[in-house]
Amino acid sequence: MRAAVLHEIGQDKLEVLDDVEAVGFGPGKVRIRVRATGLCHSDLSAMNGVLPQPAPFVPGHEGAGEILEVGEGVRHLQAGDRVVVCWLPACGACPACRRGQTELCLAGFMNAGTPNYKRPGGDLFGFAGTGTFTEEVVVDAGCAVPIPDDVPFDIAALIGCGVTTGLGAALNTADVEAGSSVAVIGCGGVGISAIQGARLRGAAEIVAVDPVPARREAALKFGASRAVSPDELPDAKQQVTGGEGFD
Ligand SMILES: NC(=O)c1ccc[n+]([C@@H]2O[C@H](COP(=O)([O-])OP(=O)(O)OC[C@H]3O[C@@H](n4cnc5c(N)ncnc54)[C@H](O)[C@@H]3O)[C@@H](O)[C@H]2O)c1
Ligand SMILES: [Zn+2]
Ligand SMILES: [Zn+2]
Image 1 (tube, rainbow, N blue to C red):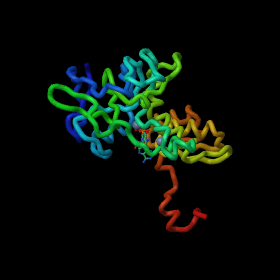
Image 2: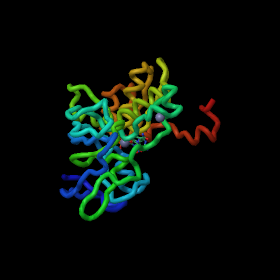
Image 3: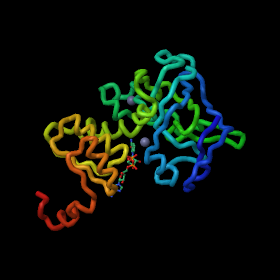
Image 4: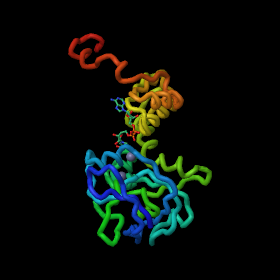
């Protein structure tokens, strides 16, 4: 099958190869036909070495598709189910999960550190234990989250990382309250979703900060009340050292 592969950290181009095979299928696993995948900034950061990732690897961790096959013991999924690939599923068993704070799950990646693919030339890793720039991926059944039939795959794929991270930042981490003022710095996939989360919570003022005009326009469409470039912000450092405007 085909997959886009980064051979070495620091390269800026992927090679599309057609001799790649997804490995690791067995009890507790599912094989997924990837129908759509997003590009998250973390993929780029893994490619350029900012985030630790062994190479060669298949980038991509925001994916959606259909279950092709389920391993022994997998009861909640079956072939044909439409799913989102979740690279950081909640384990359901750790103390955080048991008190209902699945966003603080301590289990970590289900698959990271183990090669997810092979080809005649050797093993390949999948980014964040997944690797969705490919036609098929094998993951732990907990990494496959069913979605309704009417959610298009290209939209569902984004829920695999950017949407969940941004919404989670607003709803869980910052716990935005109705009527509050929020600044979202960086309005890409994550920031736009944080803006939507703040909007959902009824924030009174949502200031989007991004140097790219198109991103600022998008932020306004997604619910920001104001969009500014970082250049337009007051010099925060000066305010702190000067002591004014910081009470
Ligand atoms: N769960 C996680 O921990 C998690 C998940 C997803 C993404 N991330 C990280 O979150 C960050 C954002 O990811 P993304 O996919 O939304 O990236 P993105 O590239 O889609 O968006 C980043 C945005 O930041 C803007 N930006 C650049 N410099 C800026 C500055 N000085 N001030 C304000 N804005 C600036 C860019 O113009 C761009 O619109 C990345 O670092 C990514 O690795 C973390
Ligand atoms: Zn857990
Ligand atoms: Zn991501």
